[in-house]
Image (cartoon, helix red, strand yellow):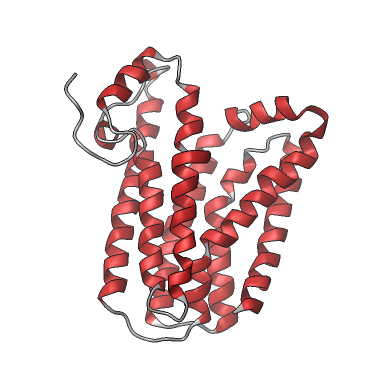
Length: 257
């Protein structure tokens, strides 16, 4: 298993190094986001094939990751096509000055690679095991994953359609899933990884992969997800009114103010 983790780390290193080179050519470090979902697909297929892991659990997990990762990368590529560098990376570029290339390599590309290795723990553990058969815990995990995928995919789709309407320029979406949570796509992302974790519990040492959903939950709630996006709208009166009515993360009915 240790050897598989090392092999996975090497794959991830060269994968993100490739995206780093693309980003330097394009002068756009937000390219890294396009590779996030696809990187998990690559890692899933590599660990599955290299270990000959073709059990019902590994196949189910592979389908989950391929569907999620392919959709996410496709969505981000379409969203960013023809647009300037994302505001987060543009701000860092300005703050880092002459050190932008080195810091981007370490703090953007390699850091994302490290996070991918941690978050992919359930995938690696499932594919390192040849334990056959599915149980109720696996089915529960798949059900939770489907809920998460619905929130992420539908939330992204609703936001994209909202932004396509010129009349909504500068406005805040408050309809659909966005009526119940300010970040349905982030909630969906976190929920999916808790579902993935449940599929890993039944394999040897699978409980250790709890680091995966804990990490993605921490990132989304306290680091790169919700805080950074909401900071962008701290002076937006419409968003602040929306925030007073709508749950920050967990979906719930809006408050009546």
